[in-house]
Image 1: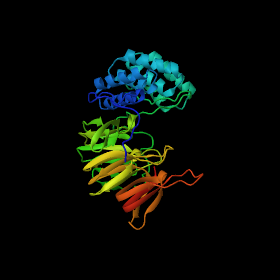
Image 2: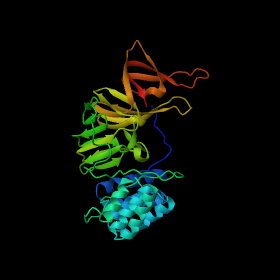
Image 3: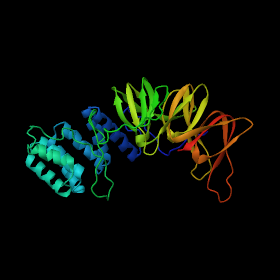
Image 4: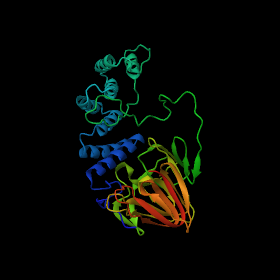
Length: 382
């Protein structure tokens, strides 16, 4: 296998400097780091990263929203009001932004304007329950002296050109309920375990490990004061100048974590692969996490010049990997019975196998590979 070349380099920098020279990648690094620190209550550090992200993309609504949330939590209320006023000028009538601004106004003692904002929202959507509850509490109809919306929702980024829409709330406090969390329980599907990883119907649970590597894009819950650092790709035992992944999908080394939960991606799931002493080769983009392993490196299985090359993650056991795939299945390969597989369905292989590209038939777009030797091949939907 030959060294991959994503086409962008990384500077030598301090541990928490941006991991790449690409502007979008640098923005995502600071934005994701700031959001994580904000969720963990490390507000001053979060402010530094979010302000760095805002300088790179000043028009990013999601980043502005988190800056507004941070200003709210730090009692910089006039700054928070200014941020949400600016967002509402860009997206007038957006219900989630209106609720955010109303919450800040209430804390700032500007009840009259908050009431006007909530009343306007209810005129356009009379069935909005949260606005009803906030307005009722603001007017004192429930007889309690409290400010509604104790935790300001953190909204997600709007797609340009779309009309008003509900935005996500990724920083919901632990123990708070959401719609659909009560009611009839469904039977649980099978649970699989290997090393520190437990695959459940809803996602991936990680516990009982001091050091492992993972991507953070589907991480939704953590316990412990953990730290993570982006990894660079390896080739022939040496770190290269290229990141292992990009943006929010950078592979990171995580330490100090007690437990973590990764939610399943839409329409997908996770699959565990446990390696003994043998080598395993897996489609790099599908590797979500791994632990153990005597050594690992990155490479590329060349598949012609039509952009069909398969970027590969190679690990020698003992170790455990987590792959993102839907219903992957292993097929054994014997020395006297080589296996022909469609490259688009190839998730990986293990053992002493040698892959080679088969010549495409004229007019046929599918790329196939031949795997010879002794081992097993994993096929599924990447």
